[in-house]
Length: 113
Image (cartoon, rainbow, N blue to C red; front, side, top):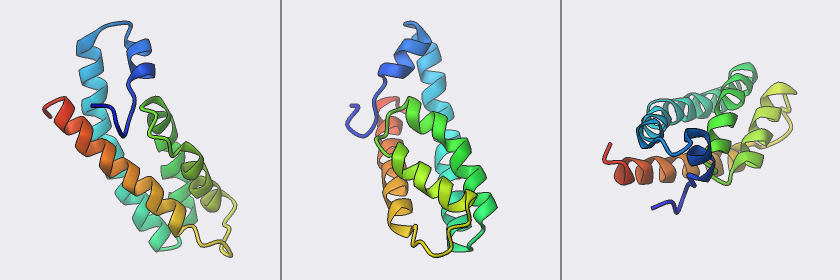
């Protein structure tokens, strides 16, 4: 439990309400993997605006669950925001996607979702 994510900020926000923690975990699973897929497709299609918007949307949740890839996600976001066509952002994207997949699998297991 909590190898690829951390619940300390989630617990602080929930103030001990386990049901709320469960809801946040479920919401993570409903939103973040889908957003990660959109982010992947946006980068692959050089859709800078969509990449920026999706990465920006993902930041609070990635930060709250402490996946450890916030800086990488910000680099992907900035790639989109500033249309940095000369930069190969795929390595950073792969780091983010791997972290999302690992955390999602672990959360699914830990919360029996």
